[in-house]
Length: 268
Length: 290
Image (tube, rainbow over all chains, first blue to last red; front, side):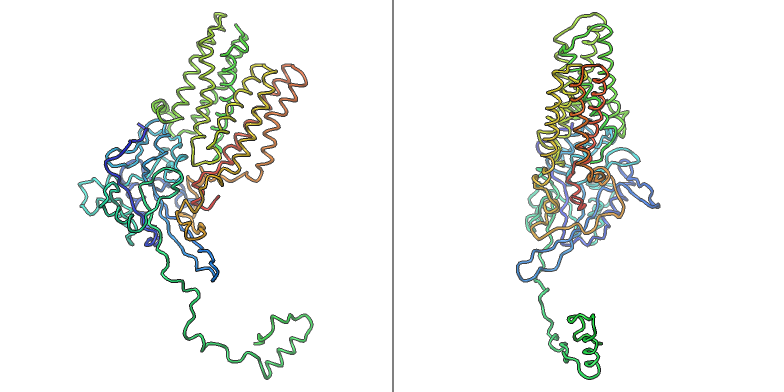
């Protein structure tokens, strides 16, 4: 059924902390590894060692530069933000309702959005409907692939308990990714979202994403205008050149074709 | 959006085929015998040919039957059902005209409604896409429907009807272009809302996730040919509307009418290529490509 459930018992999802992500792409690799070796069609690569390699990824890390506005005292330095992006498991998932076969669905029990690969005809319409680029058609299997929130890990009793979380979360070396139930107000992810002002991506699309992003903290102080205490001692002592260099400067200055501004004081 | 030839071929040919079926269903004209056979053969070749072309872009066409199941939520599913229902009803209606020389009027009207309905559902597949602001407005179904009806009138040989309908189709197509050009800006979706970082300052895509390309960039961030968009628009509207009108005004001969149909078809194909190639999917914002 591609109609969406009116509510789900749990709302499993991720909190991604843009403040601590270091952009190492470890989540990208662990995701690709787990989801190639386990559930569903493997995530294929095309021309992997050739000149134009491409492949299917369920998680990709972008990097953005933020240039703060100039508020009259000179602009603060630009900030670099690493930005991992995967399926947000939206409450109002547009990718699910457009599916003509019922292959795409949102689970009533935990809200995970999945694709039944046996029913997928590979029309690509769900990827059109997703504003986040979370779905990718696998060029080899010709079915739509997307983040499963590692549904084959989080309930997997063959794994040690500490491994029962999505591969990206388990592998993140800077603890930038957190997994939990957003329906529970006391869960780690709900608390983090409340404390740090967790935000939605493209809220105007009305998709109601479950995954939240924690904005990078504002830099505690703008150091761009700071003056080093040693600076007064480093001022040049002689501003006018004298002696031979001074004579050379003036001589060169008086030659035709020299521009006055450039040569002044720059004789050596 | 990537302008897939299969989808352009489908929407152009089957739009024209279903347009002709709609006129045949309404009894404008109501031929019998061999003449009816030729009319229906042309309509079915276009409609079914287009539908077959559309299955070429599927990853697993052998599972296509499953696509009839989700009519409650999916416009693509509704399109499939509408198309098959239209083709079956019109086949029975056509058999009456061809073999029995009788016109079962009610059946024809139902078939005509389903034929136009098919084109409407096709249009709604695009119109529903909030992610493509250029498509997400009323001009998309208006453009698809008016072009379908104008083309149908042209093929059905209804010259006095076809001329004003062609002008109407041209107006709808131009409205789609004009409104579409500012749609992304008006939608309010920018790299600032996409990343949620807009309050901090100006956001710029610094580095893409991979050095190479990927499915998303190929499918949604098609930018080739945009620089020729205005020229192509002029060519499309001239071939789709202006040249057919001139040919129809010159004389009512079959040869000129045939040329008018061919010119119209090429014009519509060009317009449909632009429909995809110019459409900006918001996912491009994440790649700094808008």
